[in-house]
Length: 239
Ligand SMILES: [Fe+2]
Ligand SMILES: [Fe+2]
Image (cartoon, rainbow, N blue to C red; front, side, top):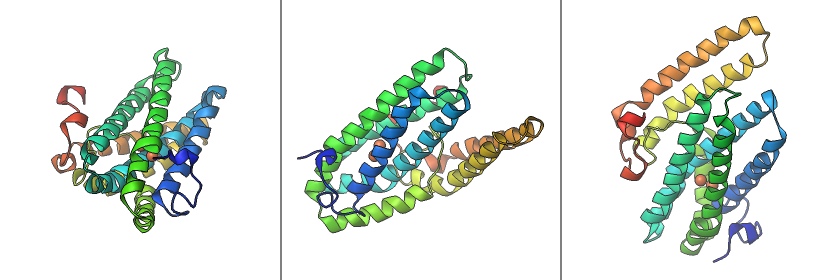
């Protein structure tokens, strides 16, 4: 069993193979994480936003397409995927806390370090263990079919933290459309708010907050928690 990091595109099953697409995103993420310590202020905020957008859409598509395939293909798939789902849940929790800390707060640097360490751990678990196991279990055609499905889901997935929603179908699948629309609308409003002159900013920020409140209300809907495992369940008192 060889890590994806040591394999060529052909060995991974070609450009559309899920293994190649995962590795490409992981490399992109690593480059952004490397740049993070050299940034500050607005530049750091924008880089963190780009990292979150990549991480949350990537992980959402893993949970919707890839981990169910792993559970179908491997006897110990249940155990293996529960572990990465826990990692995803921890990352979501850390980023949610990060969003609530003031930009100059002392807690912020520690939270960023913890998030970066966990993101690197998640990539290593996937590239060194889970995905090589999937590679042994299925043929290249299946890897390419998974690559196409994963890419389609990733491009339309929610871009922000949603800690309460189930990490597994069917709740996870049901959440895709409403939360993706809300998140992408907020991304657009926040992006514009950072660029317009100061007096116009509060209107956009409050519009984005209102959309955020709607997204939080959607998250609470019971059907969106269907399929959730106890390991990744967020207790009521922590919501
Ligand atoms: Fe991944
Ligand atoms: Fe992941």
